Image 1: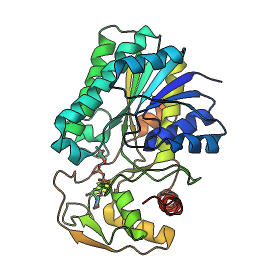
Image 2: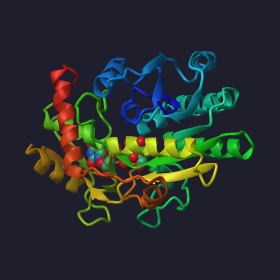
Image 3: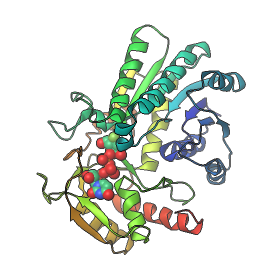
Image 4: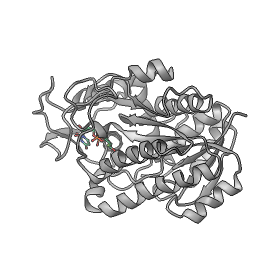
Length: 344
Ligand code: UFG
C-alpha cells in the first residue's frame, strides 16, 4: 500500500472516478461525503470495480468536530484531495451565501486540521472558470485571472487564494491546484458516472437524456459566436483521464518532487470542440440521432476556451489519452445503465 488519502466529495462525479484510480494505484482511500449530491451505493460500485471497498464517512466538511473525528479515526492521512463543493453556476447566483459558506468554510476547516494531524498536502479542484474569456488561446496557467462571472466561480478563485496565503504564512503543507476544463463521460464499466440531479444544466447529461427520450430536445445556446461554426468551444476532458491527473499530483506531492509549495496545472486535452461538433461526434460514435435546435445565447457563457496542457504533460507526466468518440460512447453507455437501474 502507498499512502492514505482523504477524498472529500469522493462519492461525487469526479471524486468517485478518482477514488477508483487511487485504489488501482495502491493508495488507501478514506471518503468523506455528506451525500448532498450523490448516493451511498457509489461506495459499493467503487468496491465492485476495484475489489476494495473504500472507507466511507458520511460527514459534512462544514461540521468541524465531525470532520476532526475522521482524522482521529483514520490516523496517518498523508494528503487530501478536496472535491466536496457546490457546483451549479446558476444556483450560485440565486444563493450566493450558501455557495460561499459551503465552498469556503469546508476548505478552511480542512486547512486548519491538516497541520494538527500531520497531513502533508492538498490537491484542490479548481476550474478553468478562473480564466473567464482568455485573451490568448490555448490558455496557459500564466494567463490572468479574470473577475468571476458567478459566486461559484468566485469561490474557486478565493479558495486558490486561501491556499496560497496559508502556505505563504508558513504552515508546513504543499498544495496542487488542478484547473479542470469540461469533464465528461463515465467509467468504462458503466458502474459510476455523473448522477442526474433534476434538469441538467451541463451539455452532456442534457444531450444523453435527450438521446434516450427523457428530454424532448437539446437546445444549442447560440450559433452566432465568433467561432468557425458559430457555436461555443470548450475543452472536453474524459473523466477517467481527469481522475488519473489526481494520482499523478498525489505521487508528485508525496514523493517531495514539487518545485514550488503551491503548483497549478491545467487539466484539459488541448483541443477545442464546438457544441455542434460535439453533437455530430456523438451521433457518429453512437449511431443515435439527436433532436436539437439552435436557440439564443445563454447568459454568462464564455465564447471559447481550451487548455494548453503542456505543463501537466511535462511536469506531472500526465496526458489526456481517451478520444472524444470513446468518451461520448462512455457517456451514452452510462445513460443506458441508469435506465437499467431505473434512475432517470
Ligand atoms: N450548452 C448547450 N446546451 C445545453 C447546455 C450547454 O448548448 O443544454 C453549451 C453551453 O452554451 C456551452 C457548452 O454547451 O457552450 C458547455 O456548457 P456546460 O454547461 O456543459 O459547461 P460550461 O462550460 O458552461 O461550464 C462548465 C462547468 C462549470 C465550470 C465551467 C468552466 O459546468 O462548473 O465549465 O468553464 F465553471
